[in-house]
Image (cartoon, rainbow, N blue to C red; front, side, top):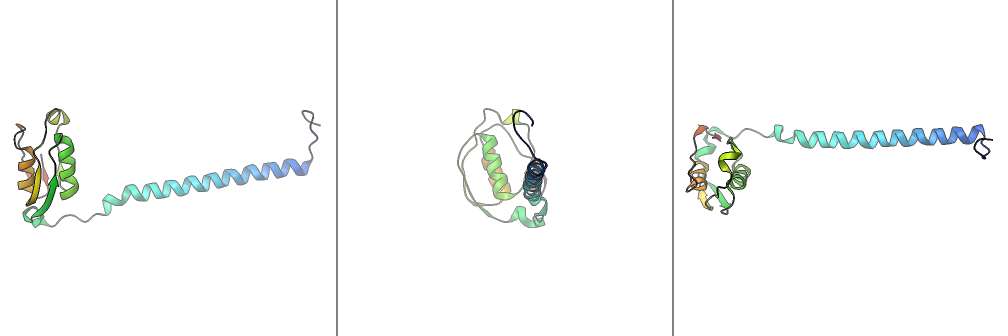
Length: 128
């Protein structure tokens, strides 16, 4: 008798076996979630690089006037360009709206127009 309860060897073994199965099931679920999360996080690395002439190809833009950092993120989403800038430089600045079909470089120039900021292209798909 333990704590006022009668236990048998079979019951204790069954409970231990059940705990082990629960732990294994939990481990399996955790491993599966980790595998899915890891594969989703790795997806951007599978993207193919943009062709060298992508900077000269017209793209349809529909980016409303908004805080500059949000507008730059929208631009990145449309073009896939890599943009590096200090968030302090964008703070308190609002972008111009960019609507229409144009090259990414033209769109970026319009985006920062009136902010007192300028862009400096590093390559055909990146800018600062």
